[in-house]
Picture 1: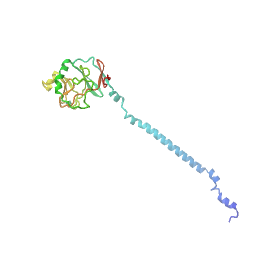
Picture 2: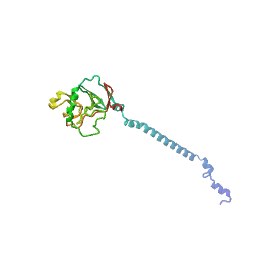
Picture 3: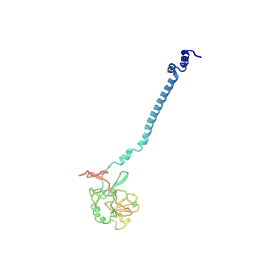
Picture 4: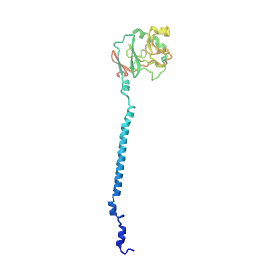
Length: 224
Ligand code: FES
């Protein structure tokens, strides 16, 4: 049986439980170091994962951006009509679609008074309405040059310019204009539908004259 305090103190401050010894014990320190290392590894892996996700997503994000070709397709196109003979048509591409520029003769323009009565497209439609800067009948800025989208409003064929020879296809009544090779829809020299099944006129795209012989399709004239 212990007889003095020293025995009890010795028991209480045994080497295994001494605070002094505890502070010098290497085991808790290495545990802390391991914990630090784990945290460091976790943060490093998280950072690497974020970097990998960022670089990995670049092709995906790029796929949503318009390509140079797509951007170019949306640009206005300029067409030189100095070499276009009276009575001839010149096609060009705008936004992947065929545009037709017809240099009309006086005789072609004279037919429009009669074909005005034959128009089939009389229902207002904002998608097919003419720009405000073109004439209501001849549908042009300069009557000599008609600019229309050359895509039949029936099923999308490119209508062909047909003068007198069109009578052999549609009969003697044909006044001249564009005939669609698909189902023989007819459009007059202003691109107005005068024979179905096409339901709408050939639309007039936005366009302007950069000079008397250079037409820019895709841009309206500057406001005056
Ligand atoms: Fe023009 Fe059918 S596509 S008439």
